[in-house]
Image (tube, rainbow, N blue to C red):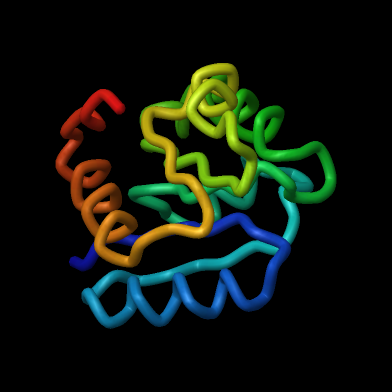
Length: 126
């Protein structure tokens, strides 16, 4: 069974690009353009890895990630926090995400982080 990647981003182009990249690598992709009822969306998706944008409606990526990490049956799912903000690393720590990815991102870096998240390999220090 191929892993499922759940992507939260309100930018349709980012969702499309990430979907194409991840599907070409054999992943199942589920996308969401807001984080309203984030816990239910995560449960419904069957996600193995979550990509979470910082600037996502309604509550934002930090609060959405905190909610995921405080929800018993989904808190184990690794989150890759991605943002165009210059302090994406500290934001990801604040949110409780295991990984971070600055936007704009390199496709190879995205692929590497998703593989690390699936394999539960820590992100190298920056």
